[in-house]
Every structure is written in structure tokens, then in C-alpha cells.
Length: 274
Image (spheres, rainbow, N blue to C red):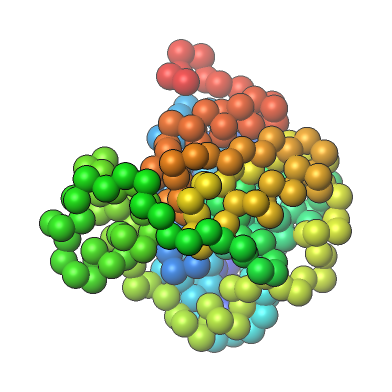
């Protein structure tokens, strides 16, 4: 059973925790749930001393019902409650995929002196996304094995369609499909405004930003400008990948996260496989 924090009976945040070490808040994107991020992130963290806190954003997964979450800063108020439980003192890390990347930046803007590092995977940014048209990078025709509704989900998300990505879709993505409260999503899972604007608050911790060149949901060009905002940012645009980048190019994302954790100062466990 997941743990949870609350602002009210109708405003809660469900999460679960894996491992020990520096806390890392891990946030999924819109129309997903914590299981997707856990599915791709666990093999990438390995044996490093990181306490992974996998969060269901309001309106998603076990963070329902969520009618009491009425604006984006209510989401951050819930995260502050979670920090009181899981990272009351000291520094913490934050990672987000898609819209979770936006909230990762917003959390860091609220706590610029406490955040030890930010990892942004295909982050959504405020304003026009300027996304490219859908372009399939590789199609091994594996989606023909899926039922029509799952096929539409797979082909709308993945631009690399192989046996490997189909297996990841079935194992990690399918279990979270449909777990969404649409009204809360439209009301609170947005790009702000926030009292602490992530575009104006300075954060000097190590940052990694990785985007897919064929991401037809949030694009990749504007994400490159985050290198101008964060003075310690590593910004990478991956070819032959889209919004499902952590599933399509897991080796690349794992290597970038390993380098980021090195920069943060989180050691590799002795004998751990890199």
C-alpha cells in the first residue's frame, strides 16, 4: 500500500519509497502514474545510496480523488508536506519526466538552497511547445499484436517501435493507462503560474536535461535554452527518440543520470555495475 500526505480529505499525494540515502523525488508526466517512472528509473539508479520517492501527482494513480487540489501551487504544497515526512532536513534531488519535469523545476524554485540536483527528462515548459510533427524512427510492425486501444496508446507515445520497446510499454506503461481524474489534471497539472517562478529563481545545483529530437508532445528546441538558465546544466538532445525517451534510449538516459549523480556527489556503491 502506498503512503500519503494530505492537505484535506480531497487533496492527497500518494507515494512509495525504495532504497536509502539522499532523497530523490521522482515525478511522472500527465496521464501516467508513479509506476512508469519507477519502471524505467530503478535499473538506472543501481546500488547508489539514493532514497527514491515515487509520487503520484494529484489526479493520477492513487492520488485520487483530488477535487481539493485546485491550482498548481496546491501540488507544491502537497510536495512540501511530503518533504516534511521524507526529507525534513538536508538536501534532496528531484527528477521529472514530461510534466513531472515542469513540477521538478517548480519544486526546486521553492527550495533553491536545499535542492542538490535536478534531472529533467523530456520536460514540458510553459508556453508554446513548438513540437515537431510525428515521425516514426523505426517500425518493426510489432504494434500489430496489440488490441486497438493499446495500439493507439503505443503508437501515439513511441516513435521507436521494436520488440524491446513493446515489452517496456506492456510492462511499465500499460498498467498506468487510464488512472486519471481529468478535472484535476486540467485545473492543477499545468505550467503555473507559481508563486516561485522556475524561470526566474536561480538554482546552482547540477542539472541534466535530456530531450528526444522526435518528441512530438513537448519538443526539444526550447529545452536547450535551459542551459542558459541553469549554470551547471548538461543539456542533451537525443536523436532517434521521442517523448518515450527513457524507454527508447534507456542506456543513454542511464549514463546521463550516472554522470549527474557523480556531479551531485552521490557515490557509486563498491562493486556496483555502472
